[in-house]
Length: 203
Image 1 (cartoon, rainbow, N blue to C red):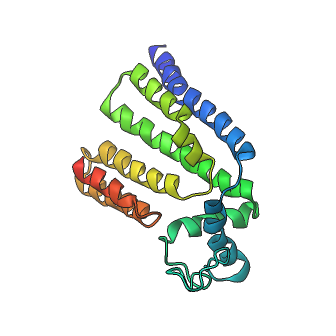
Image 2 (image 1 turned 90 degrees about the vertical axis):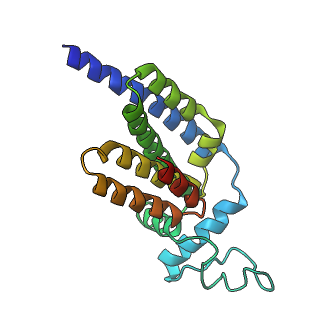
């Protein structure tokens, strides 16, 4: 009976912030105004699935440092464009689809943070309040409901921490390998993945 109650508390600690995050993010997905980054970043993914190349045709780059971007995309790491292309291939091209991809990464992020906190502390109040604050944080909600790659990069970094912390005592070599694998994926999503690497190096 104690185990059942404990499992129920663990479930509520996790699910309540998740539900709040989903409701607030979906509200923002359908109400916030489009902005330039969403168009620029989606262009490479849309061209990949429709025309077979990953150039960005939404930026007029002639005579600038981005000249040639309409044919090749080297101004950002490629992983987000590939993930976005796969997502849009399944769910069709559109602004809301682009944004819903980041809701997925928001859920991954909060799940990884939950596992990190569970490893650090057994205090359910601290875990619940931490997840709750994150689920209503303005910057996190903006990232969750917009069409940029930042949250995907953050998610991979958080996964690297969660994996490393949760398996290092059982298999240190595997923990190091998987931690570095996911933080590498973070860097292949956005240059700020180097911050994730610094965090992994610290822990």
